[in-house]
Image (cartoon, rainbow, N blue to C red):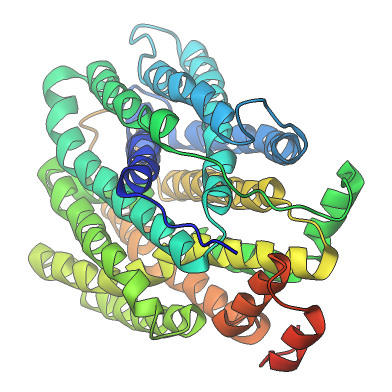
Length: 453
């Protein structure tokens, strides 16, 4: 069988698409709550907006995952969806940040709710097909790892741009103009994939799967469910990204700290992402995940115990932590791809759309839940909305607990789930891929497996 070797231009177009989408994603994940409370929406109301959006998302994402698996366009299975998203994501991003300043609180809440739901639906149009596209571009695990690592690199590059640009732009030109600039950059980055990328391999089940079969295969794919559960547990209490602006302004005393804090998170990821594929040629990704998780938990404990009295020391510790956190973040999509191979090996159905819609839904649910829980937390600690409001000592202590202590709980739970429940390893996944591609007999692979599934 001829091996697929992707050209540099095709790899770049895949990576730069991730850059474009993440500009919108990080703008919203990092600054939407701050924007809403600045325009006078109470923290508890902001939390409710995020919860309402996720109720719709709970219906929207699985349906779209089924659509991706069942619908085949003449010009491809995944790329046509990305063409729609190229227009929809930038427009919906701007809509979120142009709430009329003189509107009543009710209008602001309704506008923000509708705009967030609209953006969420538009992002779904790209998230599921884009993540599944790598499995259609190449059947080679190392090539896929390169694509996912490149996408991760551009993801963190986008985060770096947002971290630097947004804190400088919105105080000078306002939120609406800032969102428009980010949306235009997003649109430009989304274009190349439509001219450079090809779908070559979408897999083939023995027979056409019904919608019921697809959902049953998802339920039976225990490792996809285990990894999804671990991802949710590890991120749902991580309020640092949501509260970055609040922590900088109210605890450290100036919005100017927003950029250094964001850079401490994004710069390590940017550089580590490029070295992960080489690392994974020497180390099983599961072992890399576990070791780096343990290290980040240890550093988080140090961060909380030392406090924020010395901002430069805090930023240094966050930077070191994220060198290791980058490894288990970059490997996330690789684990999903492995779960797809496991699903096809055991059930004969290759349902990338459902598998990656699970990841897409998980990502958005995490953003919404962390956003909602963080805002409920602020409300519980007595946060006062409005630009320039002065917070009490009790509120400042609460912001620090939400920022530094709560992420530890989720990290420990995630580590335990992966350590004791997730059994897939790279050696065995490579054998499954060979069977799925018709290169190896199932019986021969079974004799070479090192684990039990």
